[in-house]
Image 1 (tube, one colour):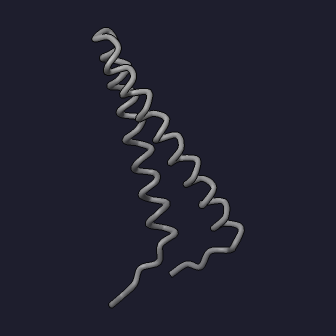
Image 2 (spheres, rainbow, N blue to C red):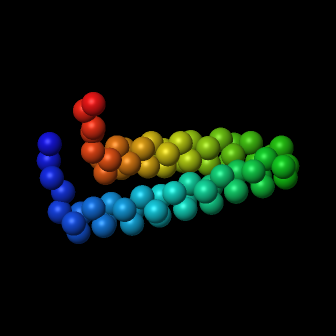
Length: 71
């Protein structure tokens, strides 16, 4: 397994925090648009796709930061 330097862990941790915040912001925006007007359907679809991409990146970073434990 590849070991990570402390500064790499810190950088990834900060990136993870920012991604989670952006993901949460998108969720709030989507909810507001869904309750607003039906004309926002395309915009909501695009935001949901962006939110899913963020979630995928969050999971990749979490998996990288969390060591595998063999029981």
